[in-house]
Image 1 (cartoon, rainbow, N blue to C red):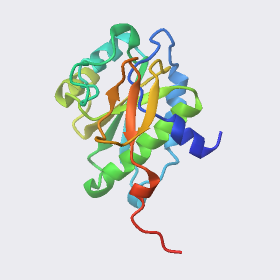
Image 2: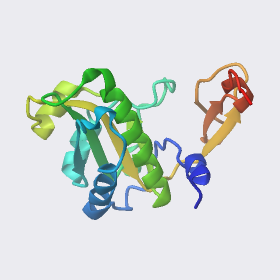
Image 3: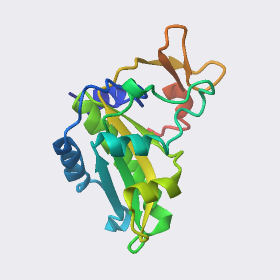
Image 4: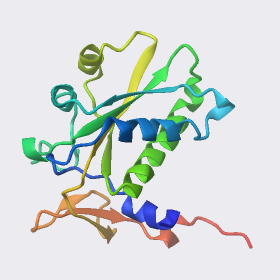
Amino acid sequence: MKVSELVKKSRCRREFYHSEKISQKTLIDIIESLRYISSAKNLQPLRYIGSTNENINAEIFSTLKWAGYLKDWDGPKEKERPAAYLVILKDKDICDDSFVLTDAGIAIQTIMLLLADKNLGGCPIAAIDKNRLNKILSVEKHLEILYVIAIGKPKDKVIITDVKDSIKYFRDNNGNHCVPKRSAEELTYKLYG
């Protein structure tokens, strides 16, 4: 599949087929690929915690806030929750704070593309009760949680729409997750030729 097709396929997913398990090998393969991503100053300050364990997953889930624009939705139902998680951390001992979020953004997009290539889906989440998650995962003090990526076999349908009045994603009458996107023309400030 072409990269441009993977980008279009790589949507944030918020509902999953809970019965479709994710193997630890899948997480290991993703982390292996992350070795090769670009890193500012080549510091490579990111670390990862993976979980396919149902009990740990339930605890991770309890620390997350889902879909801030959907005020009447508290996240996926129990049978639609992710089968795995990747937690992205920064190593504060080697971290250069001015660039770590750039590295994390590269990692997140790479993870999302790798998932799409495997017909899986993910949802990057930044709204995290980090204190609780630190305790749950026994995170050492030199590490700081940045993001959590929920992972699973996607159940929800995501529809890309053109921005009309708002950029806020929403659910349509059929329960589809609709995501307004700006046009390429609006995104283009200047082109020199």
